[in-house]
Structure formats: C-alpha cells, structure tokens
Image 1 (cartoon, rainbow over the protein chains, first blue to last red):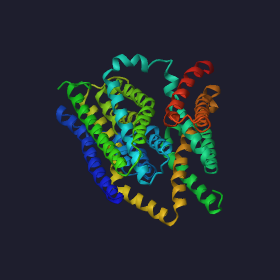
Image 2: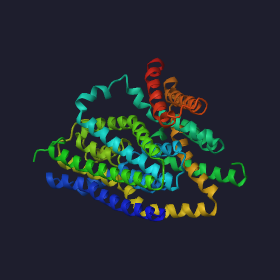
Image 3: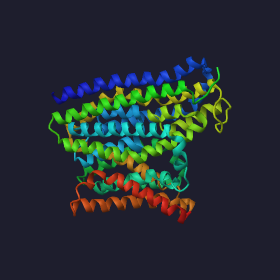
Image 4: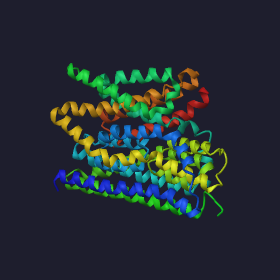
Length: 219
Length: 240
C-alpha cells in the first residue's frame, strides 16, 4: 500500500473512531439522566461549565495545535480520546521515536508513535481497571505516607530524564524558554496550576528563538 | 429511585466505555504494527517499542489511579474510572466536579446522594473536555498540511519547528518544578528529584554509548523515572 493511501485511511478510521468516541462520551451523562430520571437544570450545568470551560476549551485548542505535529496521525486520534497527554502519551511517543531513531512526520515515526500511544493507552486502561477493582486492597498502599513523595514528584522525575536528553541535543534552543519559564514560575508560583496554558507560550518563545538562530546560521 | 454512585448500572456504563477505549487502542496498535512489518521495519524493534512503552506507562498510570481514588470519595468509583480512562485528567476532573458542586451548593467532602447533582457533574465533566477530542478530526489535516508546506519549502526548518514545540513543552514543565523554591528547602525537593533523574539519564547515556549496554536504551526513561521517584521517597523525610 502506498504511504499516502495508508495515511488517508488512518485519517478515515481516526475520524470514525473519534466521532464514535464523542457519541460514547455523551451517552454517559445521557444514560445517567434517563436511568435515574434525573435531568439537571440547565443553569446548574451552565454555571458548572462556566467555572472550567473557558480555561479547558482554550487549553484543548492549544493542545491540539501543539501536540498533533509531534504525535502524528494515528496517535493524535487515539491520544485525544484516551487523554493524559502531557504526563504520559506525548513523552511516551517522543521517547519511543527517539530510541528507534525515527522522526515525527515520517511514516516510520508515525508507526512507532502510534504503537507507543496505543500500548500506553491499553496499559493505562488495564492498570486503572485493575486498580479500581482492587481498590480496597490497594488503598492503604496508594495512600501510604511513605510513597506520597514518589507520586508527588512524578513530573520532575519524568521531565528531568526527558529534558536532559533534549536539552543536551538542542542546548541553544533550550536556554531562552527554560530561563523564561524558571523566572516566570519563581515570580508567580500560582501559575503551576495553569501549566497547560504555558506550554504554547514556551513553544512560541522556543519557535521564535529557533527562527532567529536558524536565520543567523547558529543552529 | 434511590441513588448510589457505586451502583451496578454505573459499573455497566463504565465497563462499556472501557471496552470501547480498549478496542480503539487495540485497533490502532495492530494496524500500525502490521504497517510497520509491511514497509520492512524491524519486527524486533516494533516489539521492543511495545514493551518499553508499556513499562514506561506503569508509574504515570498508578499516579492516574491515585486520581480515581481522590475523586471516588465524592463521586463513587465508576465515574472517576470512566473519566480518567478517557480524555479527562485529575487536573481537569476535580475542578469540573468542584465547580458544579459549588454552583449547586453541595460540599465535595461527602459522597453524592442526589442523582440530579451527579448527572449535572457528569455533564460538566463531559462537555468541558469535549472540544479537544472534537477538534482533532476537524483540524488535524489542516495542521499537517501547514507543516508539510513548511517542510517542502525548507525541510531543516520544518524539523526544527517540531523540536522547538517540544522544547516549549519541556521548558514549561521543567520551569514549573521551580515554582515552590521560595518555600524554603522543602520547595527544592522537586528540583533535586529532577536533577537526580537527569543525572541517572546521563549515567544511562554513558552506559549505552561507552559500554554499549544496548538493551538499556529501550528502558532508560522508566528506570530513571522510578529511580528518581525512589530518591524522592528517601530525601523527603530528611529535608521536610
């Protein structure tokens, strides 16, 4: 099969799966309302949405623009249904492409990224399922104060290892966005809760810096 | 009708959603694997990608499970199980539940007993996160078209653009690690953990490149993550 046909088919299947997923997602509240005969007042849903939608709809839009070029076709359709992009799917796909020495945007990159995201989605779903079913047994372990620091520090543990690989390869590219973000977070610590919005800010700074260095033949 | 957020009906709904997610993931996995074989990619490498991605996923997945646990005290188990297996994440679901509960004047410290409150929260959780899923089939081709035209004009810049975007993400998350340094030494713990993880990765890099420990390449990231998490367990009681 020609790679363009494969790509077209991936879009075709991706769209079918995604629109079906949207239907499945919406059927959850619909089935709750029908089964319990408990349709909520419009205003309570509207007020609840008002508290989260402006931020999360913006973040959602930004995430699509930022992450789909890194992920590729199949994994984008999958990752935006199965979620946990920044803390799991994107690093997993990038790491898999890195160790296989393939680039995002190539067919090999597309395949490796899709395999990584699909595997990650399956394993996550199985772990959450097993954990949910065994929650009685696992709760003391998961709530253990001894292990709390490990889970509190999962992002530094992930981005330390991932960051050193990419920063060492793209040192000139990394300096400006890194310094900007460190100064920003030290100055306004409360932004830690809105890191999703700052990802594209970092990306724009990084792209502008890359363009400048590229134009001056420095990278 | 009496309402129980852990009812059999809600578990059935959850199982249906989970089966759908698994089916979609398996579909894309098999399709990509077959295509890899078809274009002559090394089958061993494809299999290693599966194994290393699975191992890498374990620690973050357990952390997601903690999110299920957090939400289950208020919402029962089936709904958090559904939400955190699909596009939702604890950073979104908790504010969504809190926002709706406060709009309805309900405390989030007790398990929900009112089905209308429960359905309102379910709607907010669903509608609040849906755009990112919907936007992919709408925008993906256009975004890729834009990238292809950039790459066709200048392939090196096209590659740099992707690297720069990824660097933007890494810089935001690494910057966030510094958010609490004004809280004294305990605020530095995430930074120590990050540097420990980076140092472990540097050691792995040396082992791979100098001592040719090739198998380590596929498992370096999960090893560094777990090592740094263990380091956090050791240093936190000492520093705090």
